Each structure stands twice: as C-alpha cells, then as structure tokens.
Image (cartoon, rainbow, N blue to C red; front, side):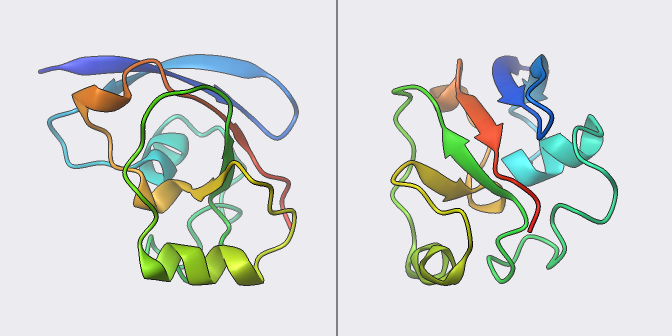
Length: 109
C-alpha cells in the first residue's frame, strides 16, 4: 500500500493531516467522507458526479493538479462561494503526484 499525506482544513477551520491511499482509486471527496471531516449528508451529495458542488474545496498550495474537465468547470460556474482556487473534490483523484496537497473545504451551502 502506498499512502501520501494531504492536509484538509475542515469547515470549522481545523487542520487535519491525513494519510491518503494511492492504490484504491479514491478522490478527495471520498477521503473527506472516510475521515468524517464533514457532517454526513453535507459532502458528495451527488455521489461524485460533478453535479452538486457539495465537495467544493479551495486549493491552498502549488501542488500541480489535473486540469478541470468541462463538467467540473460548468458546475463551478453555477456554485456558491467559488474562488479562483476552487475545485470539486470528487474530480481530484488521489495519486502520488498530489503528495503534500493542502486544501480547505468550502462553506456548506
């Protein structure tokens, strides 16, 4: 098993450094759910289909992420609390390349 470290700031402002497995085909939204860093029913409402923005997060450092796909771009266009560094957690897959990623969960709508 190959884990990387990711730092997640929850909606109360608490920082969590978590181990994220790179061998389970998980994304950031699923990681937040696995560590219970957001109240149940407030993140990943659409199941990770880029259709609700409940997993919106703000990228806090310069880790290189894959480009936004058209579905993610369209959902962020319609979402609330969007910033220049907004991404959908369900669209960021956990790979060795994102080691050290720091992000903050966007406010619950």
